[in-house]
Amino acid sequence: AQSVTQPDIHITVSEGASLELRCNYSYGATPYLFWYVQSPGQGLQLLLKYFSGDTLVQGIKGFEAEFKRSQSSFNLRKPSVHWSDAAEYFCAVGARQAGTALIFGKGTTLSVSS
Amino acid sequence: DTEVTQTPKHLVMGMTNKKSLKCEQHMGHRAMYWYKQKAKKPPELMFVYSYEKLSINESVPSRFSPECPNSSLLNLHLHALQPEDSALYLCASSQDVGREKLFFGSGTQLSVL
Image (tube, rainbow over all chains, first blue to last red; front, side, top):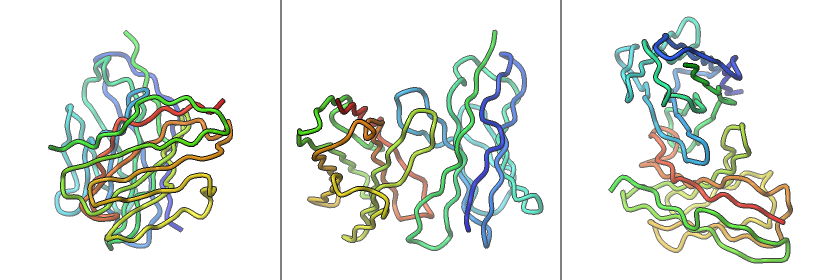
């Protein structure tokens, strides 16, 4: 069965420190991979996506993620966290064939300390 | 226009009320979705409307009924809701189902008293 695991429920990072949020997936083939961010009471905003090609993808707000097929992972990174990055982060996978909706991980809450 | 617009932003209703949530997009997307999201939880897919075909999550109770008047609009009709239905209801759209990124609206925060 297809699934997405975000092992960390809550992470606290100091402002200016680096960040890595983990995402592991279970899928029959190479899926489409996404990271979304959600501020309280708001909808989800796409940070970045991986479809094919270069396994290191750049996104908005200084985020990047690396697809590692051997580890079935798609971890999100940022070299220097800003207080405004505090939010909920969701990893999601989508099928390459049309007709299957995205599967979301349970999310990781990021807190930023000053 | 890359927005998905949801109205209202907040809704408080009693268990005997009938209300509707509205969602609109003008990006020419062929798939539209309703998600339910509880606090600190991921969005749960309720309905997908794509190519004039409705797909339903079997676990969604019949007190929720979607309606797609045209390719730009997706409504969610609410009737006889329960307090546990209180949540953030998110509408989203995409060019196609599964392969494309989702564009989310800002949601309707629903409270059922």
